[in-house]
Image 1: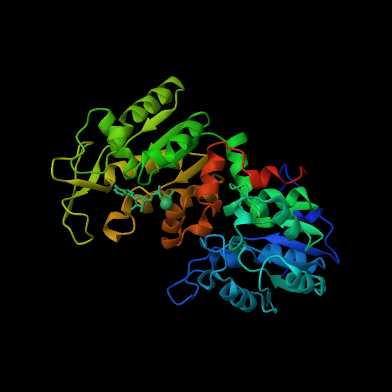
Image 2: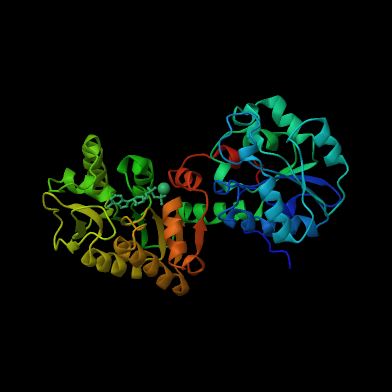
Length: 405
Ligand code: ADP
Ligand code: MG
């Protein structure tokens, strides 16, 4: 496999790091879902690290991989061992992956020192030590002492100031891996220099989760298209009836002030003009379209309606930059997934015409994957919380800690 080169970003990338004949510590995101038997149910996160690992291996590095898995409460817990990840990585790389008994300490030191170029050692769960999340300097030093250089590739963890994100890069020569570089490239491109029209599509369950991202995007976009349960709070704030739909009563004022801000900033703010509604949230429940923005008493909104899907698709067909976070409806139930699929399709249609299309957020990404459209969009942001914080305009400690290019 030929090595892929990273996009140009403001931070140093792995191609600029001296790695040949060196032991390189790589922070990866191996926080994979496991079933009750400890079997990995989705290895996307492991597969996504392969380009970075292959890049470094081809350049003659020995790799020491570190990661966290789940929430083991700062002490060893076999339920959260990375052992299954080592096995899966072995079969994906077709190379031996040695599993360390811990992530720091003398035994691990010995294993690290014995590594030769091309070797791989996976450290045990970083969160078996409370010092990881506390960004304890001594712990960061112990981790750094295993290697001669550091590559950060765990985008999903860089919004936290932990030892393996914020601590280690201040000790070792460091750089961003391919996965992280791609995230930074796309997310900063849309925030700093978007081609217009720039449209954000926001949905999901709650306004309260997305207030800051809406505030930040109001300074950037030409239009905001709102769907999901979040829309009901905005519509209710405008005095419409929402039946039994999920409305955040305590966020009506926030919703009003966001609508006002959009108006002041001349950002077009679109809310659903119709809804798919049911009497019970059940995939088998009979559903109907409202035909307008109200939802009658006794009924619950579960998706944007067909008129809204059409309006949004038409608006998106003219966009040059799109950021999407949050599904349009309860897409987990197939009868309520049409609105979400329409957005995914609209983005897939404009991407080959030169638009930059980015999806972030765990559930939105899952929806795009379910629709088999992931490879039709410019960028699928895997970070969840990290992508949201990036779009909120926050400084992410694990990125800030890396040296400039
Ligand atoms: P993401 O993970 O993409 O950031 P969120 O976590 O904010 O998205 O929201 C996803 C959730 O929102 C999904 O579980 C979906 O079922 C829910 N949701 C979307 N529309 C509605 C609705 N109309 N009523 C209730 N829940 C909804
Ligand atoms: Mg979610």
